Image (tube, rainbow, N blue to C red; front, side, top):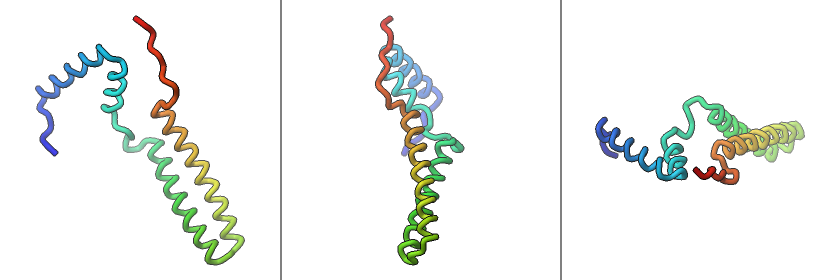
Amino acid sequence: MGEALSPREQFVLAVIEENLRADDAVLDRRLARMRRHPLPPWSPLRELCCAVCVLGASSVALLAAAIATSSATVASAFAAVSALTLAALRRLVCRWARQRGTGPPQQEPPE
């Protein structure tokens, strides 16, 4: 990419952002979201995402085994694991939506 900004350039950029934030509340929210990292290294959301991926892969493997063997035991295991996968996926989507704030926009009180 390029070189990182020098401390002076970082300071100038911070001053410009502060001036823009004072003028526009929507821009302030956007800049705040851009600054923070989407997922910290050990966040519960990241762990849940990994669990959903592992459960999904297990579901696919069990489905293939159930089709190949026509075993009721393997089919039951697939049903159980796929139910867990869907429950974890639902929880992941709900957390993601809550983190993104996808509800109706809140109006700011006039000053």
